[in-house]
Image 1 (cartoon, chains in turn orange, blue):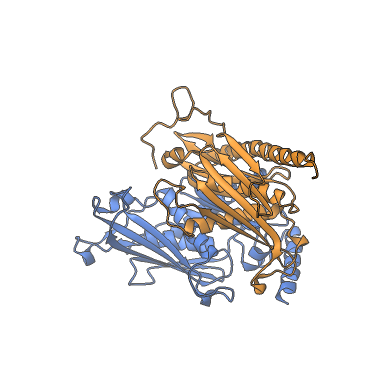
Image 2: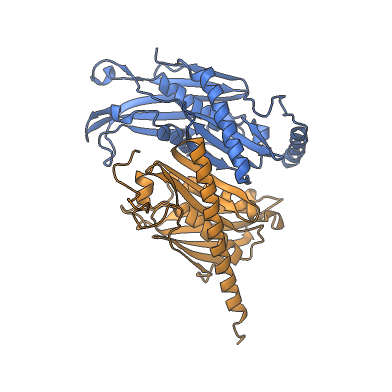
Length: 244
Length: 262
């Protein structure tokens, strides 16, 4: 995976003008879907994802129920038009894996013990993709869970870090991911300082890994502030609405 | 009933770990007894039967000529698949791979691919037309925990002992598969706040989370995957990764050193 093209310019900035530790622009909208119990639209640079939460609700089939807690289900799905070359609809191996790790990133904060035998369903649709869709999906889903009023121990925030031109940088674009040397998506619960998603592929030394992890933690903290702000804005807005 | 037993066992494991002990008497950083037999399937170009305690995994590598991917016309292709066959555990069911099987295959694949262990450029027969396709098939035979490490080890051991079947396809003499590195997967779990290496099935089900780290001969890391409903602090994550890389060195020296095609 050696890069033939330069990903960091002479002035130390990246091809899109960002500094190594800079995030792409983020836009968060809470409660965008009418039918869902909670929802969130999330933009990270060119990534556009939408998350919906349904539940707690009855879980079918019954043998899948857990007598002690709610079952959390997560579906990550990419729209056929979200990528350069049309993607065949339906789950592939990549999205099955992403669904699993995303669920495991979010479930630690959900107080599932409150809803035995129930299901909490999280759906993430990727509308446009430019590297970092799983982290965008987790960010959106976390806000959607809060919007649905699901009892949680904290918000989950996620971001990817990577290595390009030998340098550790925050929040890779797909160009950087393709030509870079490493990609590491991380999710964490800022309130409890817990990492709930960690994946990595590439090739790095231990020192580089530690540096990357620190950068990811800093990135997650910044995203957490934005998620919090979006939720506060949404709910202070509805409190002032007049009752007809 | 089994749920009650699970809870009791979990309690027992937690108490043991708090006293610095494990259910099978190992130290926290110890692997179970590990045995790797290579060339066990003569029809396969490479194969390895891995026993990790009671966990048993058979990995077979097959090679055949085929078309390259359009974006890498001069590179061989590597495809990894894992089957959690029902004979391996009462909880495995027949049918297409579920998320656990898919995750297993994808993590094993990433470790080998990202380490650059296989020189895919050397597997080009005719640019844009014909390249060697490597199929790595993981067949789980007995699930007693830590399928990830057993499968990854079986995969690299099979590849290191594999031959390219040139003769069968009229492409000259058989040659050894070009393998340049030896990625080793080590999995750790968190039980009662302690990091334990190579969890057995009981430990796996009691653990709050799991971290798999695949590292190479030079100590670099080529893949990681966290699993399970739980998390680790950044500091503890770094400690766990260090432990995994240390363990990988031992495993590499013990099992992979000197492996080559017969």
